[in-house]
Length: 68
Image (cartoon, rainbow, N blue to C red; front, top):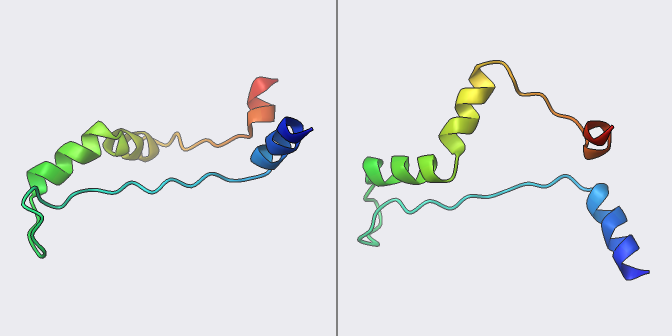
């Protein structure tokens, strides 16, 4: 039924993620706190992803292939 249809739809999509970063804690336009932004990039794993990609391991595979 509905769960099967949902699972099929999810398997046939490509997920994309948008990460929002606060440029400053004062909520002021045009103000960029590099330490705050760097901390947020570390916390959400973006810097680690960049490090891994630079190492030459950007291997992508489908869930079905991985499960075999």
